[in-house]
Image (cartoon, rainbow, N blue to C red):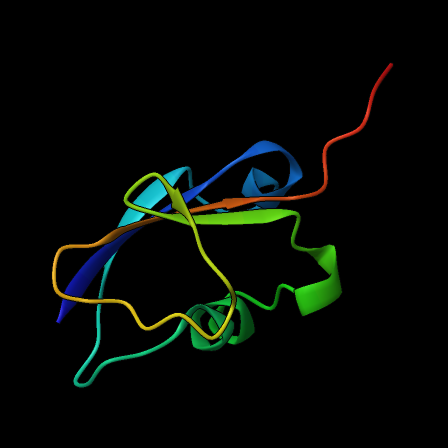
Length: 74
């Protein structure tokens, strides 16, 4: 199963911007966070194919996962 993972803002530091990852079986967002060594509490927003998703959401073949840290400003 292939999914594309896109990282934004500080999640890109020392990593890549976009990468296609292959898995032998279905995985959830939490699994990918673990693989990337991103703590769940560091996640601001996760989008699967542009739609807000919880960390226990299961990814499907050719999904695009976008990960954003919390965003602040004023």
